[in-house]
Amino acid sequence: MIIDSFAHVLPKDFAKELHTTWPSPELASVFQLDYFWDLNKRTKVLDSLNIDVQVVTLARPDIWLRAPPKLAKEFAVKANDAVAETASKSRGRLVGVGTIPIVYQGAVDEVKRCVEELGLKGIQLFTHSNGQPIDSVGYTEIFEYANNRGVPIWLHPQTWPHHVWSNQYALDRVLGWLFETSLAMCRLVLGGILDRFPNLKIVTHHLGAMMPFTDIRLEGFFRTMTMYPYAEARQLSAPPAQLLRRFYADTVVLSSSHHAFLCGLEFFGSDRVLFATDYPFGPEEGTWWARHVISTIKGAPIDDEVRRKVLGENARRLLGIA
Image (spheres, rainbow, N blue to C red):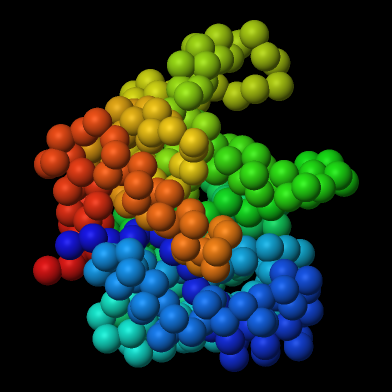
């Protein structure tokens, strides 16, 4: 079984309603891109790529930037209903994941509804909530529920204007999203969240972003934190580099060679790397990146057992698919 563990969907009716209430260029840009919501087209693409099951999360995190909590709360319900409906119509080809766009008071109730009533397999969180870090107090109830119930969390990067020119040339996505993911992962480690909730299962986009390349740099700074008076050192159960290996990581690394994939595979281990395509983003209606990822995995110098784990077995186990 081949499972695409991190892909996206944007149900059309939901997008239109949100755009009427909270208009944004992000939403306006996708109304004519029917492959974001057309199930027939998506099924044909999955068949052409030999993908059996695809995990879908709500696309376009930037549509929530600066949205007030009241609006986010109202439309989170509508978004999750729409994703659940899309998955139910797919005849088993799609597995839905709910989204909490902004961490508002009582957001854990929507997480519970997604899992216990809608039958969604997990929850998607963004790397920050309108500028508030992912280890802030507002997330605690969600992490506690996910930890106790074994609910996986999909972690998606969210843009933030570090500079007024950050989004020029789409570099906020090309580079900024990798930074945002890495920043969130480090905050979850250094902020003690992984120690406090040892059963958390968090799937990171883009193969753990920068962390397979910078774990020893983080380790060195952690061990010399007293040199930086503005920093805070916290007692952890293990070295940061070791705790980072508790994350899951998808294969959307999008490098021109297989070396980056092998680096992530070595860092996280063969049991925690999940095949994913980021469909339908990328050129050629989302198929170009997907084909690239598949080619990278199939051409990588790994044994067939590891390849089988990456392509589907790890995700099947994480999702509880029989």
